[in-house]
Amino acid sequence: MNEETRWQDRYEDQEISESPALQSFKTERDAIKGFLELKSWQGRAVGLPGDDATPEDIAKFVAKTKERVPNLTVLPNEDNPDDVKRFWNDLGTPDDIKGYNPPADAVVLDETLDAQLKEIAHKTGMTTKQYQAFRETYVEGTQEMETKNAAIRSEGEAQLKAHWGAAHDENMQITDTMIKQFEDKNVPLGEVNTAGRILLMNVAKSLGNDPQIFDQINKPKPTKTPADIRADQDRYRARLKDSKLNGQSRKDVLAKYNQTFIDLEPYN
Image 1 (cartoon, rainbow, N blue to C red):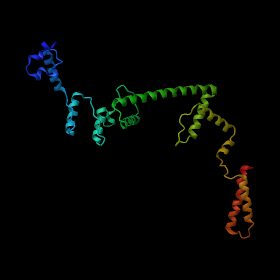
Image 2 (image 1 turned 30 degrees about the vertical axis):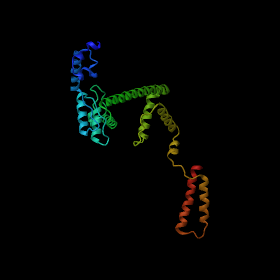
Image 3 (image 1 turned 120 degrees about the vertical axis):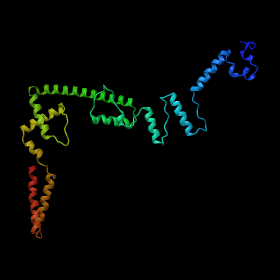
Image 4 (image 1 turned 180 degrees about the vertical axis):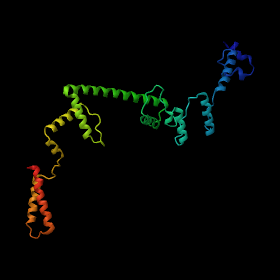
């Protein structure tokens, strides 16, 4: 379109005919359509707060914007606990652990364990979806570990049967009895692996073949060496030769002197 046929020239008002804003419209119809689109956009637009906006102005701006964009959230004022809570709620973090619910088809967990997982999720600010993913990952890892442990137990059982042969069942009963009899109830032994079973059975055989092992285990070991005990003997013997030692004191030294001979017996 050339200068002689410009539609803007039909208007004597230079504010219209020379308006830069209208130069991009090739026809008057295009200009009218543009105006209508602008009015429509203005009805939907949210004006940005100016430099002199008050907190109330900003709050109204945020509220109006969220009407248009429901998923919009705003960074919190870290000095305001309620605002921080609002922020995490916007992201999907529930107010407490009761807000975490696994899918209907999820694996059922022990109540205590389930509560512990929810506590971890809430303390770390997980959303409900993140909690579900976290829970699912935990369950998968536990199931994988249980599968590996079952394979290890099965392999261990096969090794015991191969090692003990026909005596397998009897040896299992013997080692079970040993565990039950000697296990410290305050410090449970837990599951005994293949090497542990063989060790217990070897110990049982040794104790059966040599009962004196019990005495060696149960008899307390002297706290002094033979040289220490003989040195005590010499010291007590010298004191007994002292003419000034009499009465109860002499009896005490004599008792200690006699005890040295008993202390030397394990070394003879």
